[in-house]
Image (cartoon, rainbow, N blue to C red; front, side):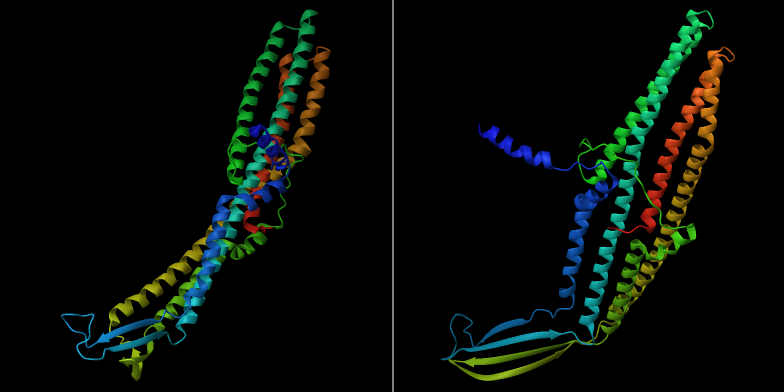
Length: 409
């Protein structure tokens, strides 16, 4: 009874849990909300922000208590009548703006970590859009193959009727059956590709690979905002990956200034009191100054900071070039697939359809052989499958372009 009651309580929760996949927006929203890598980067960003305040804080003060006049044989007793106790409190003060520089460097590092999260979000959204396009494409390809198999069955029946009338050879029907078997094999491969796309999509979503996905309600639409490749690459320097490296370069530059400021010593201020018996006998004020004696070590630290700055600047330039290369490659794939799809839709499909209709009419009156009819059918339906494949490639290219120019919502 207890198990039944718990199951009844769990049913409404399970029923109301949304299943992503019915639209591209559901995929994007799920990635931004549930992806574990993004959650980890959120925590890392918050941790980097938490390091800003401590970076510029004063070091903890030092308190000390000293006892004088103790008996060496009996340390818990004083040698004389009274015991002398010294109290001291010291605080080190970094000067010359070192605390502000340390806080600035930590702030720039936190900005870099936050931009790393934006970069990862863009890449994950692009991967999710690409996986969703493959997931949708597999269903469309299977639908085209099913129509083609249905047409082949009709052609097989037509060939059987003509064979019964003595107007065609039995080989025509057998060829139609062989063609259907080949298409069934291709259908199995397309269904396997759908399962792979679903597993990839679930992995990007942060779900189990075998988790159910909703059936897409409509074809995914991935809009590319840029009108040309030059316009798309103009915003490459604003890509979060490039800006992240730029923030790290600025942090390295701040560290160079900080290491130069370390040439100047800090000071330590202290106050103390001397207790003799039950009363305070005297007080003291202390001032300590660091002696910059380890010059060689200090010069090496300055050299290290300059080299790290040069490395950060070089890495920023390399990241910019990598983003531009990714953008150019994605743009080429997207435009090529779009032109291919338009050519198939506007030219090849109408031509193949007209060829099929003509071959079908001619075969029914015995003017062409079965091979010509079968070839016309394969060209017509093959062009439709090529259109679906080209649309998939266009969506994949658009997803890659959007990763370069897109905005995270």
